[in-house]
Amino acid sequence: MKNSFFVFVLILLAANFAAAQDSSRYFGAKVGRSEQRGNSTYYYDAYGSQVGRSENRGTGTYYYNRDGSTAGRSDVRGTSTYHYGSNGTSMGRTTTTGPSTYYYNSNGSQAGRSNTFGTSTYYYNSNGSLSGRTNSSGSSTYFYNPNGSQAGRRER
Image 1 (cartoon, rainbow, N blue to C red):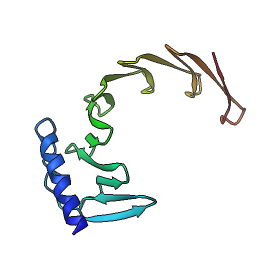
Image 2: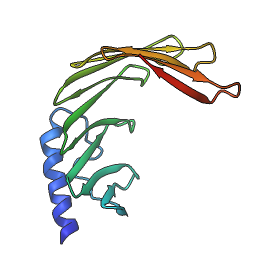
Image 3: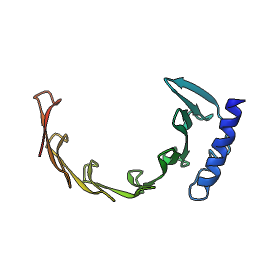
Image 4: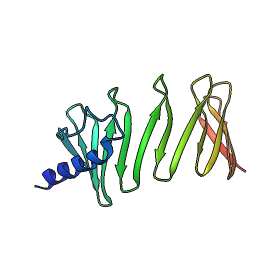
């Protein structure tokens, strides 16, 4: 009975979100299996994609595009919608706190992010490892040992 109720809640949540999302592959889909991990139960569809989560704080529902990328989620923190570029790269997300936009360099690494809290810029060394980050709170510099593992970080 509890699982049937959750599926019903899952479908109701999906109905509220479906108008803005391409969730035709998953809307109304039956839960294929569930898995208990700690205090949470995760629900998956017949394709193996996570479609829901139930935990002490409440439930969550996940929505997917036809290509399998995450289109959005709805949970106790609010609703998020994800946006992708023509090459499939994540370009942004809209949440209940406002939109976020992601920027990428020519190597495909995230070069920056803007949201209602400000802008962050990311810097990379010649090996492609993150070497620094700046935002309204300050900056961080990352250090690596000779084998390429991060050895430290300095905050300013």
